[in-house]
Length: 58
Image 1: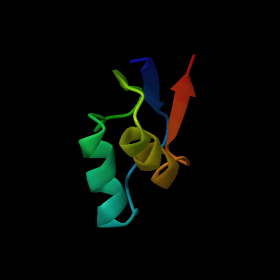
Image 2 (image 1 turned 120 degrees about the vertical axis):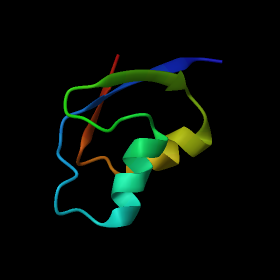
Image 3 (image 1 turned 90 degrees about the vertical axis):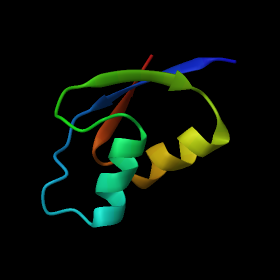
């Protein structure tokens, strides 16, 4: 499958616990970290729920 690269650009401070746990589930827990994951519908849904704190890199 295709890979998708994600970078954390927003801080999880003062965000709901669900959004903080979603970032950890994506493998992101500190600012400006990048991670490469499989492009699946589950990952896309997680990105959509924290889209204000992450950036998808091509």
